[in-house]
Length: 250
Image (tube, rainbow, N blue to C red):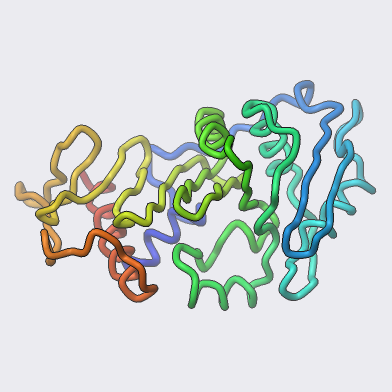
């Protein structure tokens, strides 16, 4: 249940009181938008304008839905223009002319299979609704992530060790997955992580308390500095989920 809570935060199906809804740009700011994208899994590219003065261009959005299909199954869905607008704004802010799309639409079956083998895949991911993109920007990736979070337009996941970021048009929320210990989570506006004693801390070093006592998980300083196996990562994921639960009650 704890793991589901954490993954629900990522998916946007559960929101804490401090997490706001996505705020779309005004339509006037979204005219004449152009994108240049590449899909490394299929070798396909997209280069063109998807919006004009009248709004999203239907035939181009259909083309994008094909380009952003589930490359595992070949199935497609109508991609949410909100996440495309989000991507275009992030690219503008980071000064990027092109983006690599690592993952877009996923069928329920594909997502379910990935959730069993891949760390951090939420059961009700925004990917299955055509509202999420996993993106790589090269050396500008960190700048793009910071710009995306500042926009407060949806979910932004940061995977620095895997060299990609996730954006979606769901509720506004942020999370960070680090290979170092996978012990950092942004809950609302608070960063939650572990110290060497196994105590859960919020940003600034303040300890999370439950019943007046610091929240502590077993293992403490005996935890490895690097977690490499899927099983070990899922254990830490459950621990972070508990931290999110206590942060929610604090």
